[in-house]
Length: 220
Ligand SMILES: *Cc1c(COP(=O)(O)O)cnc(C)c1O
Image (cartoon, rainbow, N blue to C red; front, side, top):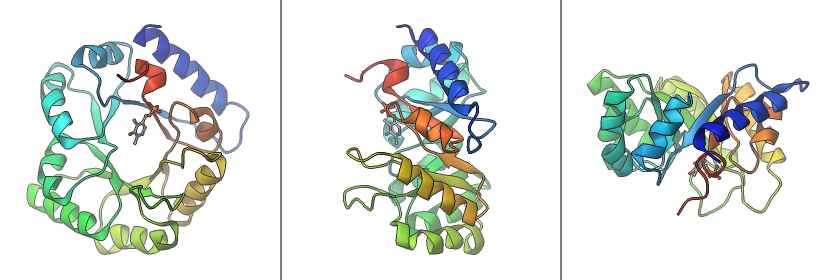
């Protein structure tokens, strides 16, 4: 299947999942998770109408995106992988959105760098909804305090929450937890849903699905 056909199919599936469910959001962003994808594949997705892209690593984004951005200035680039504190300066010059704010040291560094550079980067807070030790994200029992700290003490431009549910569990309870948490803090955006579970995520209120394999094909 071509990338253009995949994009069209995915829009249809997202619209189908939005219909008839009272939890679904009126607008759902299709974010293409482009880690490991060539500039050629990315350009194909852009020509098929994709505007939002997610990269996992600052270094890979820095190698691929400056040239693509010059050719396609309307793109919005999201960081969806872990951010090391020493890469914060570089990250805020590369990305429009950082979806993976998940610890105090990082939040502090982001707030300071944005102030210094006079650049506001939209933030999501990543929640480790499954409390998995190897996974990034704030633990659910520390999330309320951390969200409050980012929003009110640091005044970071936080718009929503992001999660990656555990592989081996049904995702719906994780999506529900994320949604409840966002509502508690008055946050409008929910970044949840990947290739295997995006329709469920949309039915449960996702405003941003992050799609890799179902858009570009299996990764090498
Ligand atoms: C790779 C990745 C995705 C996309 O995963 P697929 O299963 O290929 O759709 C989404 N979110 C994050 C954080 C990722 O790293």
